[in-house]
Image (cartoon, rainbow, N blue to C red; front, top):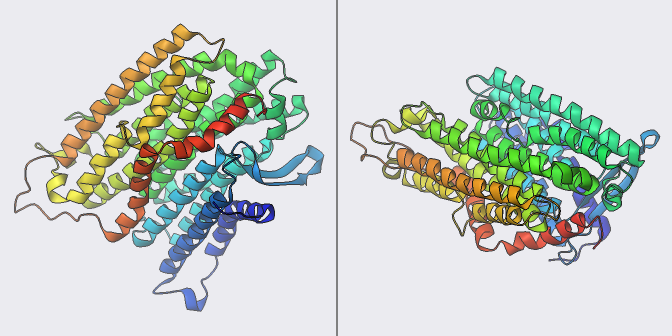
Length: 525
């Protein structure tokens, strides 16, 4: 790690959040003559790579300058008055909980911009596409960096419009209906969430998340905390998404362009679970204590439901869409994250945060791979891909088949890869939940979640068998392009980080654990 002054750290964090917005405005302007390249479209796509690359570089330098000896302390903090009448402040900062999510967002957005430079999505002019991508990045980064409840809400909502247009204008079949469903679900949930945030802020006399976390709900009655958790939790649960508020997700993923699916699964779903950890757990602990068993119950139902839906899509003759299958798998995986949070223990919450990062890496890679398969075959229909004997991807495009198999075994939680640790820690937390929570109920949830891991392995292995294996290709079959150089560039970081996080989980847990311990202790070290 390197020694960086606090003022430089503040600048780096502010730059990371604000630079994409400036870049989005610049993307809509004509390119200077010397930077146009072969065409204006190429110039604006290169602009997207440049801006997201600069943001990723700033996030990495911020990580190097982060004091890893004190990850529970908010660092690179900026706190200036914005709307004095409402006591709303531009309050930014990162700790061991938010830093990994900040870097994950910057990385995935850069990889999406790089992929789009070589393979632009079919649709209108790339200018609007790049601008929307950058606005989406700025809103997501701000969500993980802001420390004011109202600013959190604004950042949380900022991502909705860009994602709506990415689906509606650059998506595939059924994109209009999927985009409307996405925005209606999330907007309705957010209205309820805003009421909960206002209730907490006005009753406590401040919207400052650090002050509220330190107070630990002492100024809020138990009944008010329960109402706040219900209201805030609905908005967060829609974005997560938690069963039964998940129905917008499969349609959105199926219709979205490849990079839209990567960002939706890899980044946007994390905003909901992050809100549970950053806002609900420390600010309304008694209300969370009352509702935690119900949250855990919904979580494990989601695990089983998502897995059974995937099994139904994977079977022969079901006409299952591969993108839709991966979308339903996210419902199950995010169920483990919610289960970990519901335990209200350091073990469970650390597992939830680890599973968040692992899901972003692995599912981001899977959506890239499924998008590439759809581009090559013209369809993501599993029956059309597999035919009667299997798609034989190992024989026709061995690198692509190998990467798909790698992503599948990482997603099912194979030990040694990133998917294993988060789900295991979430179940460990449920095995011994926080004091006062019903241990028999959580033991039941643990058993159900464990059965869900078996179902997850079942449907992913069926997918690998049907897509990767099969009869050797015949001479009359058209050749299938294997992984291209730009695809290697976009996918390799995700595969490498999946392995590294699986082999050295202590790197990530060393960041999150002190921050989680302090957060659950009410801001006390």
